Length: 257
Image (cartoon, rainbow, N blue to C red; front, side, top):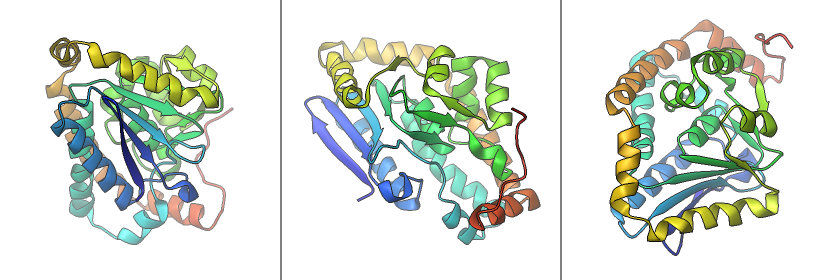
C-alpha cells in the first residue's frame, strides 16, 4: 500500500509510503489519500488528522512518467483534475484539524498538500517548491485558494511564477510553517498537537474552520484551476519540459538568482 492509515487514540495518522519515488503522486497514492480522507470524514470519533511522509520526504509531487504516458486530450485532463479536486476539496473542508508533518521534499502537489493543512510542522531539512512553472504547468490541488490566504497575493505570485525552492527557515518566516522541530521530534509534536483536540468541542472546532473558510471561492478557484491545468498539459512547452526532464536535460525556465 502506498498510503498507510493508523489510528492513534482519536488521531488518524496518514502516511504517504512510497519512499522509492519520494512519495510521488501516483494514481495509487492519490486513491489511497482519497480513501483515507473519506474514512476520516465518516468516523466521528476521529478528532484530528495528521499527514506525513515516509523515507525522509513528504511528497515529491506529480509522477512525471505517468503523466507523460497518459496521453489525454484537454477534456481528459480536465476530468482527471476534477477527480483529484474532489478529495482535495473534502480535505480543505474537513471539519476537524489537519496537521502536516513535513520532512524533506514537499514539491509540486506535495507542497499543495501541505498547504491544505491547518497547521504545518516541519524539520529544518524540509524544502518547499511549487515546481509547476519549470514544467510549463500551473499550480494545482487548491494552491490558488490556499497560498494567497497564507502568504498574501504578492508573495503567492512570486512563489508560483518563480518555481524556486523555499527552505524551512524562510517557510516559517513567511507563515507557511508554524513550527520547526528536529526530525526525531516532528511526529511526536504532531501527535501531541492532534491529541489536544480529543477533549475540545467538536462543534466549536468545526465552526471555527467553517467560519474561516470561503466555500464559494474554493469551488470557483478549483474549477478555474482545472481548466487552466488542462490547457497547460496540452501545451508544447509542457511536452518539451517533460521530455527534457525524462532525458535528464536541464529545464529551460530558470528564475534569476
